[in-house]
Structures are given as structure tokens and as C-alpha cells.
Amino acid sequence: MTEIEQLETDQAMMRKALDEAMRAYEAGEVPVGAIVVAGGRVIARAHNLTERLNDVTAHAEMQAITAAAHYLGGKYLKGCTLYVTLEPCMMCAGALAWAQIDRVVFGASDPGRGGLSQPGALHPKTQLTSGVLGESCAELMQNFFAQRRKKTS
Image (cartoon, rainbow, N blue to C red; front, side, top):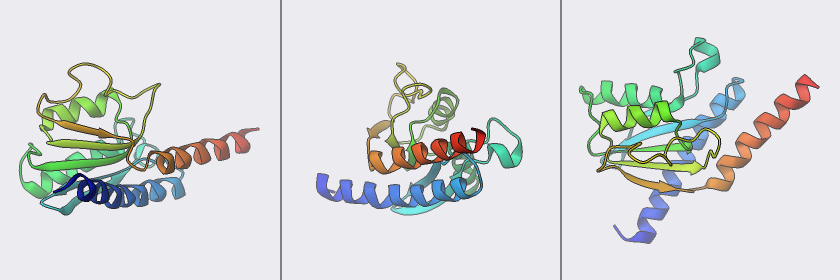
């Protein structure tokens, strides 16, 4: 696959992750969406469910990892790519490392809580791509929190 083809694929898949983030937004969840792709096919899709499940670990990435592992019938996500709208936190980065996922692609950076800047956050063989549709991903988060601030003032 050429660089241009890879970028086009990454953008198309990130749009699917953004669709999931929008589902979270509409449900009053922090709008993070994730999909897992294997062999060019989406095998798992998820969004944040922390409010609905009353579970701080119910991040989009964790839900997507669980769904993909179930689909594959094993705990390792070798040959898979995770597309997520926001840089994974340390908890999610740790889970991705244990899952030995091949590649992580994220949209918006999370300088406050993002966990991928730490050395060894991911499995040593995991490839990382950042900033794919980053502006769109960040804008969705900003709109969500601006709306929440309006409701509390």
C-alpha cells in the first residue's frame, strides 16, 4: 500500500471511529469512538460507556479490545489496527500493549491524560500514527465540553 493509499484508508476508518464518537456524544458520554480493523474489515466498534455502565474503565478502547478479542476468539490482536478519536490514556495504552495490537491510529492528542507519550506505553512492535482527522476529533470534544459548561452555568 502506498503512503497516499494508507492515508486514505486511515481517514476512512477514522470517520467510522468518529461515527462511534458521535453516538457517545448523543448519549451524553465523553465523545470517544474506536474501531478495530483486521484484514481491511471492521471487526469491532465501540464508544465510551462510562456513564451508562457506571464504570470508569468502560472507555471506547477497552470496549473495542474486548469485542475484537471475542470476535477473534483469543486475547491477542495481532494483525489488527485500532482507530480511536482521542489519544488513549495510560489504562488503555496498557491494555493495548497486553493485547499486542499491530497498530494504533488516533485523531486528537490528549496532552493532559494521553498515555502514549510514556516510553514503553505500547508493545514494542506496535506502530503508532497520530493526528488522523485530528481537527475533527478535537472539535467534537471541544463542542461536547462547551455544551456541558453551558448546562452547569
